[in-house]
Each structure stands twice: as structure tokens, then as C-alpha cells.
Image (cartoon, rainbow, N blue to C red; front, side):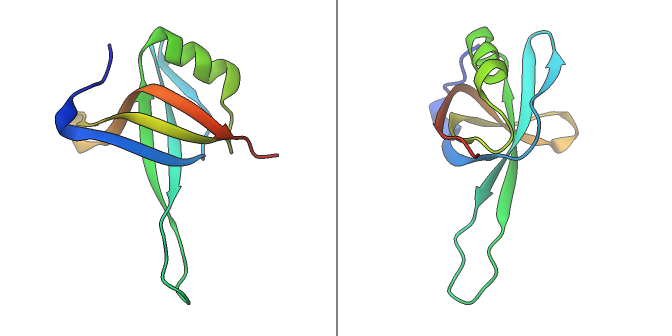
Length: 100
């Protein structure tokens, strides 16, 4: 399923802060930490989002190439799941760099 609802599209750049976990044979999830800009003299922190993918090519790419610390661009849409959890549902993940 391609996530392309134009009403709630997001494009987020951050680093993977958790291991990629399989939710079922057809979906994966991982945590994406996005550094928030801080004013001078203030402590900075990260916003953490759950990224959900269920397209076979995206799952294969993620399992083969992504690891904790990879800096990626995630394009998708925000969706609210049961119990009020909000996730970025993506079918487009691009690596920008990999931590050492």
C-alpha cells in the first residue's frame, strides 16, 4: 500500500534510534529521532517518531541496508492507530549517511 494522502504528507530527516522490528510478515517499525533546533545556550533534544512500513520493497530495503544510527529521509503520511498512537507510515525511505 502506498502512503500518499496529500492532506497529511510529511518529510522527516533523522537518525534511526532503535532496531528494525518485524510487526508481521508484511510490516516493520523503527524509531526515528529528529534533532530539534535549540536556541543558543539551551539544551537541545530529539523528537522521536515511530516509522511504519508495509510495502515489500521498502521492507526488503530496510532489512538489508538500514541499521541503528543510519541517517535517513522518511517520506510518508501521519496516521493515528488504535490506542491513539501516531506513526509515520512510509513507502519511501532514503539513506543520507551511515554512522560509524
